[in-house]
Length: 454
Image 1 (tube, helix red, strand yellow):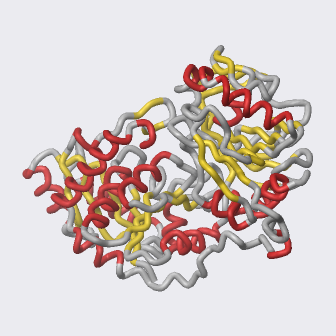
Image 2 (cartoon, rainbow, N blue to C red):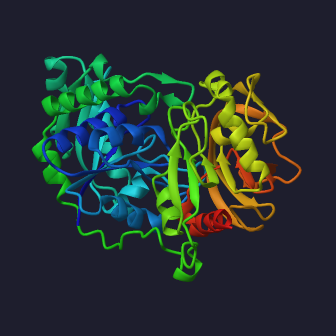
Image 3 (cartoon, one colour):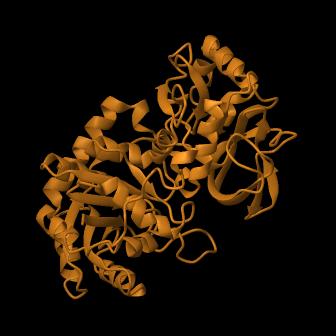
């Protein structure tokens, strides 16, 4: 059993990330082993969580992975920890559009049987905060709001008014935080700037968050609340699930296939479970940085290029011509290449006029339009990732466009919320805007690793 808290809010912008990250860091610095988690598909917040705790930030996404995997994935990440802190997404009851509570923070809290701490932006209100909290606490009897943290409190007098108003609600106030510019983190077109791009400043920001939480929150009360969570009753997810011993590529092979995984400042979006699945499938994963490394890792048999911000580093990526040519040569050889979003742009002919790898006969550019949302998709044809007809759920999140949007052999047929084809399949390359979570379909990792071994 792991003590656990879900940090939620009435709406985005209330301060969930600051409070959750600050709590993670404060508890970790007190000597506890803290497991960090994030509801939904977000890649950026988990980077700050990892910085706060020294452990991988892991996502809990009931849409992409299914509600049945939320508790097992949580138990896998939190194994051996003293405390788990789960940061919510959007407002507490906001989920996948048009699908009720699915993928909401509330649903995840219920699946984890975890108490919720509501972070309320208390600026510009006093007594009304009681009505707000009462409404959220009574909306769904299955959600247990065990405490409130009042954020952006203006003064001692303001705090006193807020606490007085909360006395009749029956939900304890477990913290009151003043406005603190030093804990702010810079944002741009897709949210916070990732840790990898500003590590020294991010370290200072996380330290400031921890200090703010220590001074303004009842850490003993929060830990006591976390320890009221009942036994979870779920077996930890195993990356070998779905990968039978007979299917693992390492079995009977002279060596493990080497799969190069793009990292560094330009490629920061990934799920911790993906390399774990590839390892369970018999592969060796090696990280490389397309901004700095001029060659792929020795013996590379396959390539995974996940999401990130290549548009921010287009000139630098383009300047690394030796690596671009190495990637193109690997793709031409027929080796498996899995590219998602940022990886798709990197494989294109150009990005904002800067030459890229030229693997795909397509050009990418920044756009003023944000593309955001969950998708249901079907594999259009056999590829290095999936057999034709494979259905899965994914997520799109970008402000770029690629023209054309699909090749002669598209990667996916999107069937919800609209119908269209997108992405590219050619030889061993599978390139798409769609972010997917392989824990939902372990056979994807197995198929990819098998292709690399061949």
